[in-house]
Amino acid sequence: MTTPLEAAEPVAVQAAGSGEDRPAGRGTLRYALSKAGGALFSIAAVIVGTFFVFRLLPGDPVRNLAQGRNMTPAQLDLERHRLGLDKPVLDQFFDFVGKTLRLDLGLSYEYKRPVLDLIGERIGPTLLLAGTGTILAVSLGIWQGTRAGWRHGSRFDRFSTGVSLVLWSVPTFWLGLLLLMVFGVGVGPIPGLFPFRGIESVDAPDGFAYLLDVASHMVLPCLTLVAVVYAQYLLVMRSSLLEEVSQDYVTTARAKGLRDEEVRRRHAVPNALLPTVTLVFMRMGFVVGGAVTVEYIYSWPGLGQLFYRAIEVPDFTLMQGTFMLITVAVILMNTLADVVYHFLDPRVRSA
View 1 (cartoon, rainbow, N blue to C red):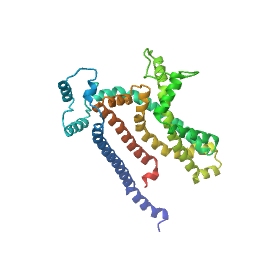
View 2: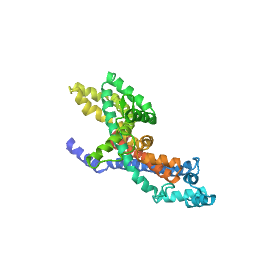
View 3: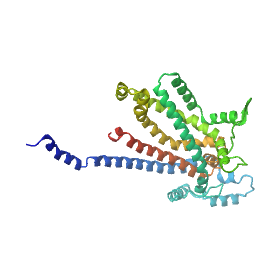
View 4: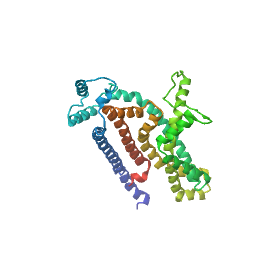
């Protein structure tokens, strides 16, 4: 007679060797590939849309570039031929797609330099500003959202939520101009406290003093970005934590005698972080795009200011290159957010 343990052994061996986890792995791979395929389709749509949308902008690039110079119609036609603007639109489009697939974004009409070189020079200041603003906004939003959600209905909850909603509703350019006038130029008895133009002083020092000089120039633009963005992290974290607080496992943890601080830190907050982590990845691309307005207000030498100058000309190749970079960053971050959330939340994997 076999014992129950002996009878169960073949079943256990069979289950272990049947590879039941492999379909789950294949499902994860299919999920990632489907998201990657969707991202590639979106990028292709961006490439097509970028070319035709910017051609609808008013203005002649050649005439705008010739302002201040006495150029004859023949010279204007020669310049238009040099830039390839005399070709049919479809020919220009196929040339644009072919070069883009080879990672050649063309030459800038105004700067007469490769667009990739211009982007490479300006992407550093943009990443510095957007990265610093993102770190501060995420940290502030999660901290305030956790405290507001755990103390739902308290004075801190009402105050922090109200302030964040007001700042979230304020247009970025208006808030930037307000901070520039009050803390940059100075209003009445309030003197100008921080520099508000560029990334460094004209007579910038060397070494550690240079880092302090750059940090002082970052205060106002970074504060503008943080004030507008952090409310999203606060509200999502607060809402997620409120949902977790009502779950049975939190009630059980409290019934076991765990301290309130330990229940919040070890149980509620880690689960409530999942939607916020997803939002962080999704917002990374948008922060780079949202820095356009801030960079223009504070003359920050990044992609935003470069893109704005390209619109003024209009410099088609430069507009296309900077816009595609920003848009592709948004698409890739959204795709990464979907994949990361798939791994973080087991409920998504089992769906």
